[in-house]
Length: 524
Image 1: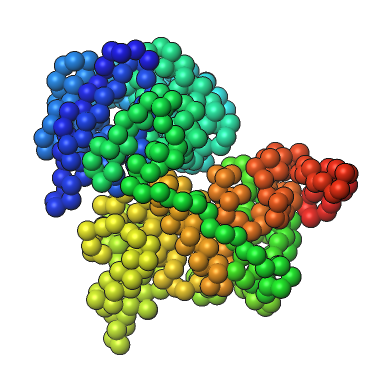
Image 2 (image 1 turned 90 degrees about the horizontal axis):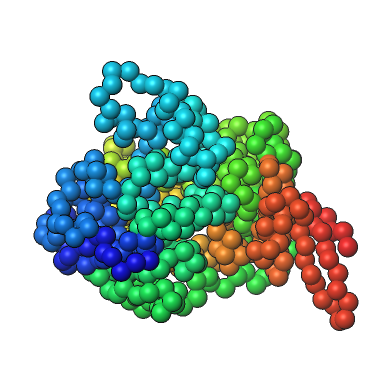
């Protein structure tokens, strides 16, 4: 990192109606620096980045690029100034090829009448080679997984040969291997003198990859420190304005043998993504499902609640066979599913907060004439959003007006609106800041303590280890084992998720044995 300043933000203000999104923010970026930007959801991080990228115009304040004052009127002007932006939410075109998405900016600037698709595919392949060489440039974008689409988004930004690269939660949908490939590229770009603004809620990434960290809170600059001069605890405290305390609530203390079985899955298969899955979910239990992205976790739980076809298997709910052909059947039984893809499946962005929350069971907010009662709808939404500590300008505002974390809270409130017996949560804290994560973890445990059965799918191993009472691990559609108590460690999960079996060192007196545990069987 050099002392040369490549970008300077001076006293920037931005309001949306009465809401102050940015209030006098200052930010300096040096050449060849990886600078972390941290803050809770709604702190102003994304707004500041959109100002830098020309998507929002500041109400006041200045932007300087390489010592020159600039006015950025749109993303195209930002690109011409050497600024690339990888958004938290994927903003690609789903119905065209990977190559067309990556080369879209160059194609728009071209004055040629015809597109050379061979050359386009070649350029795309070059952009993908270091981060995702397995992706076919000719493939339609919507044929890819969420993590693969995120890699295409990153490759698109890298293809612009930018001086400043903004990465907004880039690893939220990536596997460990994909994340490591991205980190290698970031360090290579840094060595070339390219500057990176890195937005992440994952403190381990911030402290492993970044040189400095700036914290925003409620649209106000709080501090900027060198990574070597601060600590994760200090950053979190600056973000939330208080000590967060324990990230995870106390786990279930009861013996599972004493708990009623709420859900039993036997021999569940779809003939493609998962095979012969079997487990039990107890009342008041938080049951984790872990594994690498692509292991079949989401497809498996979707099959339970009628969102994905199954070819065989039995599902029992509270001791009785459950006939679930469609998701509406699942809702009526009291089993709900929180999608991992908030933008596409979790919420209706252009619909009000109140309507999003009531939509699973509209009859709850209807009057005697079977028409929706707006007052009842707002009352229901207000009660649930107060419980989740959602920040909004009102229940009539569209969900698109909220930060990503608050959008996730709306999706959670929608699940809670039907008073479910079982909640299946797929990546419940993806893209959520540390303070909000603590609140969500506490809510999940509170629901479990009230007798709700909870299934959690998470790609964040610390979350799986810290939150779940038992953990089933999958590898390439196969159930590898179930961990309980002290067996739930990152090492054991990784071994099972990689198809290697679980290795647990347990000490009894002076003897030590290694246990390989597969599909519930122990072999000493």
